[in-house]
Image (cartoon, rainbow, N blue to C red; front, side, top):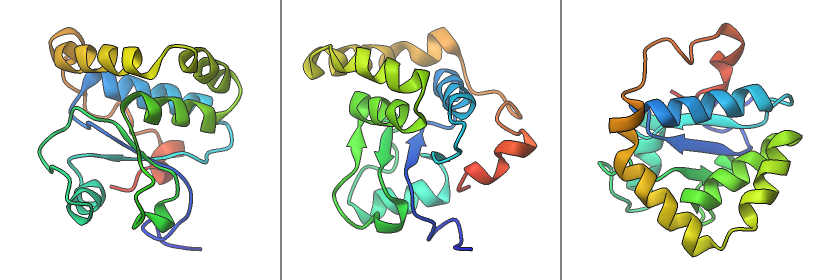
Length: 145
């Protein structure tokens, strides 16, 4: 079995200190019956290594990033903001894929403008992430850090 670092498949990089981001990760974990999508907080070693490798800011946690294949993360194929969210929803399938289709109907410029607005207010509205909320035993293997 490959190590987490070498295991292929999509990985969603998210703000590990954000309550809204934590809720989104919980939703994706529940919807992903196949267990394909994995996660890494932007503040953690795996995501920080990815950001450094690609010359991206290591202190900007307002963007969600989906790396479609972690085993091939050297390439420039990552998706950002709403494109990342839509791809993650599509990846989990079922109701997530339906939600992805609905979000895809909204023009990208509008979606990303809404994303930036929510990103600016998310901590004030949803608060900080709570410890232990993502710590279910059945989810432990889904996180890189």
